[in-house]
Amino acid sequence: MATDIKDTAHAVDAAAVMGLLPARPGLLALGEPTHGEDTLLDLRNALFRELVEREGYRTIALETDCLRGLIVDDHVTAGTGTLDEVMEHGFSHAWGALAGNRELVRWMRAHNEGRPAAEQLRFAGFDGPLEIAAAESPRQALTALHGYLADRVEADLLPCAPDTLDELLGDDDRWTEPAAMRDPARSVGRSEPAARLRVIADELAALLDAQRPHLMGVSSPDEWERARLYGRTALGLLRYHHGMADTSPSRWARLASARDRLMSLNLLALADRGPTLVYAHNSHLQRERSSMRMAGQPLEWWSAGALVSAELGAEYAFVATALGTIRHQGVGAPPPDTVEGLLSALAEDRCVVDARALSAVLGDERPASRVSPWYGYAPFDPAHLADCDGLVFVRDVPQVRRDHL
Image (cartoon, rainbow, N blue to C red; front, side, top):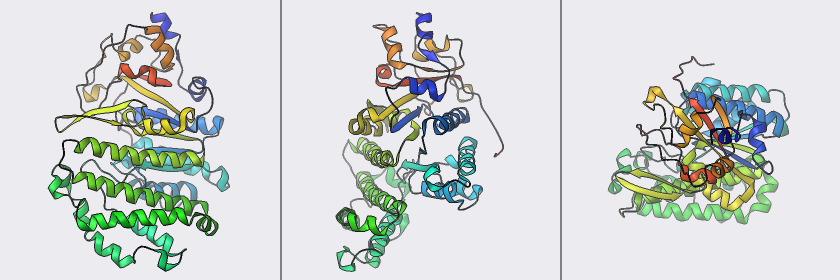
C-alpha cells in the first residue's frame, strides 16, 4: 500500500496542483490547519507566484479583514503608504507581523511597478471586520456606503442623513465591547438603534442595486466594487452583532455561520474579478460542514467554501493542507494509522496528493482521526479526504524567526 500511496503524490508546484483539476478554477482555495507558521506562508507565496506566471491568476484573497485589505490593495497597486504602515494597518488578527505576509506584499508591489492596471496583481481580505474577542462597529462600512450614494444619487432617495447615522451608531466602544462575546446582555446588537441601522443598511444596499445602471456609468470599476463591499460588510456586521445578543443555545453556531456567510459573499464577488488564490484555515474552505467546540458546546455550520462551492460548482477547487510535526507547538510525530502518519512514511518532505485517488487506494481502511494536543492546530479529518480536490502535506514545520524582509 505504501507504494500505491506514493503514486498519488507529486512535488508541490502549480503544475501539480492544476494537474489534479479538470480545468483552471475561478477560485482556487488553499487551506491551512493552523495559523501563523511562516513555513506554510512561504509555500503559499511560492505557489501564488507560479500561478501568476503560468496560470494567469491576478488576485490573492486572505483570511483577514476585508476593509483593512483595501489598504493593502492600494499599496500593491498604487504604492500608497509605506510597507511598514501597510503591515501595521492593513491586516487584522496581527497577521501583518508575519514575515511571510510581509514578503507577499513586498513582492506584489515590486511585480506591479510600472505595469498597466489590467496586468496588476490585486490583494483582498475576505473575512469580516471581526476579531476573536469582538466585532467592529459598522460605522466605517455604513458611512462609506452612504457617502458613495450621496455623491451620485438624488438626496431624497437616501433613507437618512449622515447625522442620523452618527446618532444611531453612537460611541464605537458600545459595539466593540469585548465582554459582549461571552455575555449577550453586553451586546447592543438587538437594541432599537441597531434595529434601525439594520433597516437603513438594507435600504442603502437595495438603493445600490436599484441604481446600478446609473452608478456603474458614473463610477470606476473599483469604486463600484468597493461600494458593494461596504454594503455586504455593513449588513454582515449588523447580523453578527444581532447574533451576539442572542441568548439561545444556538448562539455560537449562528455567529460562526454569520461569519462564514459574509466570507462566502466576498469570495463570490472576487470570483467575478477573475482567477483568485484563496488562503485561509481548512475549516473555512472545506466543502463539508465545519465543526468545533466553543464554550463547551459542539458547533456545526456550513463553511464559506461549502457555500461558494454550492454556487460555483467546478469553478471552486479546494486543496487542504495537512502537517506532520510542529514541535515548537507540542505537535509531535503523527500516529502511523492517521492520514498524516501515512504521508509521513513517504520520502518527500513536502508533496501534493491526489486526495480522491488516495481515498480510493485506502478503500475501506479509513485512517484514524488524529488528536491535537494544541487548540490552534486542527488535524486533517480523514472523513473529508474525498471532499478535497487535493491535499498538500508538509512533514515538519520548524520554528522560524526572521527579521522583516
